[in-house]
Each structure stands twice: as structure tokens, then as C-alpha cells.
Image (tube, rainbow, N blue to C red; front, side, top):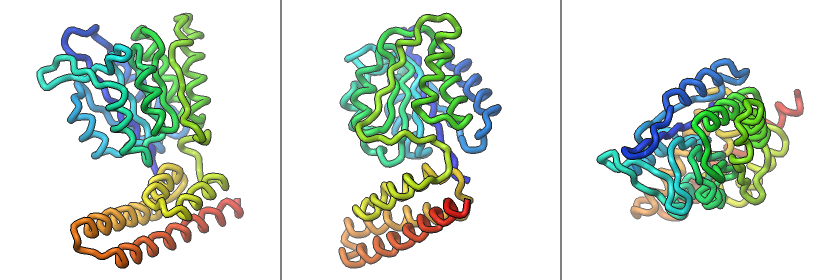
Length: 286
């Protein structure tokens, strides 16, 4: 079974208000454990996060959902930690450029930090769904939002639906901050349950990517949507990803000519189309 990786990043630099990040992590983990689709999620954490930590964690875990818990200061940026534990602001355009390199894998970014809407809008140029805060938000409301959002995803809700449930949770608790979280949807993003099995529209979407020779993106999206696929299928897709990456690297070093690289891409193209046809046949049988 394919799994959705949630990468939880937290930063609470010296001189900022102390946040109950440990409580937020614990409650999210508890919510996911009781969710009906709990086996479809892997929850990874990285605390006291610095800019190098962000890069390393993204490269290591290749998440589909990225969550930042910390402080924000509007246009000044999100507050990461420096090597000395002090504030290091990271601004919107830098974050947008960074996430553009992971746009084939990341489906949703949650910025659970005050005044983070400006960063959310920038990142949403490259990621389907981004949540940011339009104002200052209390720790209690921020944690309530996170727990309800991820538990809803774990109970087969779409990202948009999970967002609505999370805002409703804040309102039901009487915190009067339900208007602060803002969901920004990238233009042309299709609403999908992040762990649902393949459906016809998803198969057609990936087939279009293959036809456009966007094989790397097609393979990445196959993995994201293949929650119902068995481990053998998932491993086959990972092998194809590695083959494409190796071929591209060898061509750039002059160790492989363009024709050989194209042969490799054609081989992967036909294999992926065959996997998609198998998924389509299974849907027809069901």
C-alpha cells in the first residue's frame, strides 16, 4: 500500500513566544492512530528546524504534506532557527522557489504560524493546496486546527473538506478564530482525497502527463494516488524513477547520449502506461 508522508517541521527560536509543539505533535499522532486510513500515513517530525534542516528533511522524506508549526511575521517571513537558535526569517519568494523544486511530490503545505498568508500565497504558485494564517492565532486554536485537519484526512476526507472540518472545530470550541486559517488552491488543482484509490479521472490525468513527456511528474503522482496499490507496484514505480534520474545524470555528464536516454524514457513510458491500464481494468472490475 502506498503511504502519504506528512513532514512536521517546528521552529521556536530564542526570544519568541513558547509554543506547545510537543502537544501539537502528540495530538496529531493520536488522531492519526484512530483514523480509519491510519495505515496510509507516515508522520515524520523535525524540530528546532533550520534552513539546512528543511532541505535535508525534504530530500530525505519526500513528503506529500508539509506542515510548519512556528511563528510568522507577515512580509518579514517565517521564523526558522539559525545555527545559534536565534530567529532567521525566510521570506515568501525564497519559500516559493524552494517548493517549486518539489511541486511534483508535495500536494499540500500547512503554515501553522501567525500572519503566514503571504507565504502561503507565494507557495501556492507551485503546490496544489496551501494553508496560511491571515492574522495572529492562539496556540489552542492552532493545535485544534491541526488535529482536526489531519484526523479528517485520515478519515478519507479531501483536503478542502478537511480544512472546513478543522475551521469548524475551532468554532465549536468557542475560540472565535475560525476565520483565520485560509486555504489557497492552485489554479486548476483538482480536489481529491489524498489517500483514495485510483479513479478514472486520476488515471486520465497521469496518462496526459505521460503523453506530454512529463514522466517524472507522472511517476510521482502515481505514487501519491496509489494508496490502494500493493508494495510490488510501488517498488516498480520507484525503480523507474531511479532509472530516469540516473539516465538524466549520465547524459549531463556526457556518459550517455541523447538517443540512449530517449530509449530509456520510452521504456519507462510504456511500463507506466501498462501499470495505468492495469489500474483502469481493476476499476472496471469493481
